[in-house]
Image 1 (tube, rainbow, N blue to C red):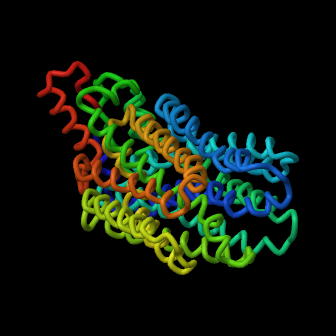
Image 2: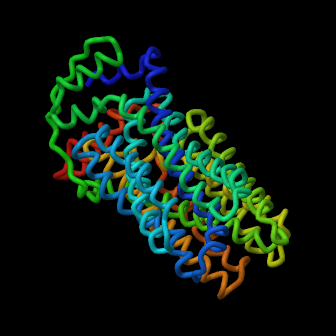
Image 3: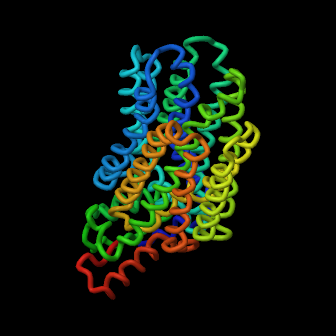
Length: 452
């Protein structure tokens, strides 16, 4: 369909712009989902409430992101990438601001939930847009950079916490408000990007797709009408696509259980070892987040060299080993915890934490690409919620070290799923991957063939 023009070296600057602005969204995701862990000790000093409300506030954005991912991911396939790409940033601005001015715990939980809808939506929207604009040979690097920016946001959340904590009892409000300021900046730049020509073609709007291709490539491109039937989200569960659907949902679920359970409670786990120093809590937790970022950067630089499959298998192997060592030590020191948590998130983010922006957008046809990514994101949010809500109860019942076996089991399951199901998509353009699905569907004699 003439999308090979997107592989032109002349488009590198434009593609970097698309990636940077999309990464601005995942940066905000990482910041807003992490900053609540940073702010929570100060919120607990400001308001008195029990562990139930604490768990609700901590998980409310994650619960909202479940709805945002599956609902707005589907709308992104219906109404376009750009429309939803801009709208979801408005949710970041509005609701991040409201969280900073919450007057009661229930208000904070509600506004965090609504903020989470925007957070969940941005995963499939940004990842899909980057994938559809990227050159084949650099698609993995561009897509994984979204994951890396998530962890930049997480690290910045700790840095903001360190800088603002001296401001006193309202420091937590300033931390939450900072997310709104970041979102406003990204919003103004996002409105300048065009619609995806691949999506326009899938919707039968070839002339508009040709105009955008001319604008961004400087060349006239003739795009053949899309004669293939439109897909519905139910296509994800057909015989041809179910294996891929199970894989992307399964590995992301396992990663989310382990990563969110660790990251959301790192400050809480470390606090008893710091002799009451909130600054030491932030430094220790920030170190863990920084190693997670380094892991994402390592993976980003390896994804086009060694491929997707070896990377994700290595990732879950390292994560599982680190968590098993943690679980086997009933009396750890703070240094031991920081080092092992750091290695756990380094390996986790080297594969599972960045390939969740790659596989869901590569393995599915254009007409349901955002829906597939949204579904995988939604399933991962279930894993996140499970990790966040179950872990505190396991700690009470079993203690910290035994509770960590829960995360080790999630890592081992992710390793098993990846070893059996992870495909290799390195060096293949999106149309070629879809063509392979077409051929498999024809061979299977399925009724949902000609996926495009």
